[in-house]
Image 1 (cartoon, helix red, strand yellow):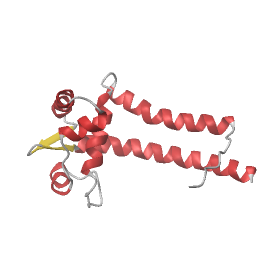
Image 2 (cartoon, one colour):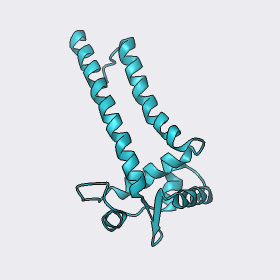
Image 3 (spheres, rainbow, N blue to C red):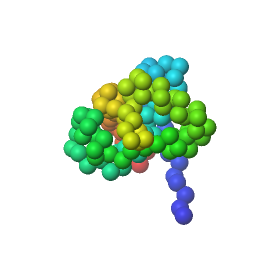
Image 4 (cartoon, helix red, strand yellow):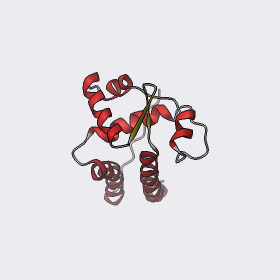
Length: 144
């Protein structure tokens, strides 16, 4: 295996990268406050759900989403977060009561509510990635 070339980045780019990473976490904190496991649980379930999802639009109604997506389960969440199963179950129940997760036939799905808000967050991240990419490309050109 080859070794990776370490690229030294200037302070401007370093700040832009830090800002990008902070955006990821700050949106989660803003949405969920002290419920730190909520975004991680939702992202684990969503990741499983989307493995086979074929629809054009993720922001479809819940019925369409559930009929097309793979259902997740409590064990997947517990393993993903390295939490006891019972702790995961309790946190998932809280998210079900808040309409962030739908449980159908013992399978877990992220709700349209979550998918809509998460899509807006993804759009924000895409814009930040575009800006960050331009900064890094500019520095790589200057370094060459």
